[in-house]
Length: 356
Ligand code: NAI
Ligand code: MG
Image (spheres, rainbow, N blue to C red):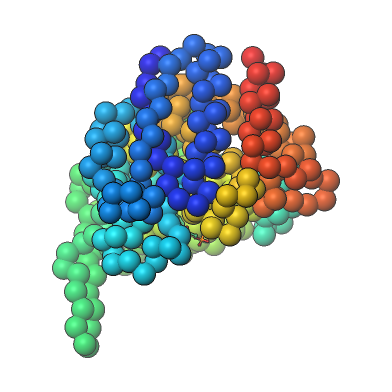
């Protein structure tokens, strides 16, 4: 298979972790007979320094000519005092909007060897394997009118039927490749948008008779995520509920450095990036955990290219290096051998070679 991948390293540890993911992609390409053309471009603070623009036209063109985007992270204190259109995170918001990436997908999977770093009891966090599908381009964050005066402020929560349909379809399709269950989270006892959401889920489920569907109010879902996270498979929800629930779910695994994400649209095109930020406190020290970026590359192979075997091989390789006791500093603990970013990647690639 021949694919072109836009690589946007960004700032801080972004370049270190995307380098790691690129090495893993190159190893996969060689071993499975694929050709991945990797095209680097600037985003975030790095792009502001070079082009006076957090998302330069050159970068948009590189991405438009690609089959998927791999991103590191953006941001840092250097750009914090800039006006809002010159902030690194504007690059991220704009790229998601430009490519209409309406579905944010965040898997949360317990790693057996890291359970002791979860804030939940081991027996609760054990075997958690869920995905949160969050609507990313509509809802309260974008609805008009949005205004404020001295005495009041207004935000507007609007969803159209088609916006709900496309995100719900994504969730059903994803559930088909997993455990076959969708939990739709809303606040249908209070909100009109949630009533419409629930109606759409009921309609769409007719096309997916093989999928088990449950509706859950967002307050109960917040509780259940910490009391019984294993009961979830695919969770689908609107923008703000998804923002909150995905951060809540992300702590179950114990480390930011382990969490990948994807922002996709219906035709398979997507942007893949670790959940964590640019971690200025450890950047340039060869200390960053590259797992989240590597697992993001695995998500790309699966969601955008349909390369399920290759994606599974990457996931297994990362887990097996961790099982062997190797980790980066963020996961250090009893019985662990702390290694550098580069050594960790080398171990993952050795593991990939062994698997074949
Ligand atoms: P952060 O995720 O960068 O770091 C939080 C803590 O986790 C730090 O102590 C960091 O060292 C650690 N950490 C994060 N990723 C790690 C990894 N892969 N390996 C080992 N340790 C890791 O969040 P923070 O500190 O709030 O933000 C730093 C900068 O990143 C800010 O400029 C912020 O705006 C930006 N940011 C960017 C995001 C993105 O590009 N998607 C997301 C979140 C923050
Ligand atoms: Mg958030």
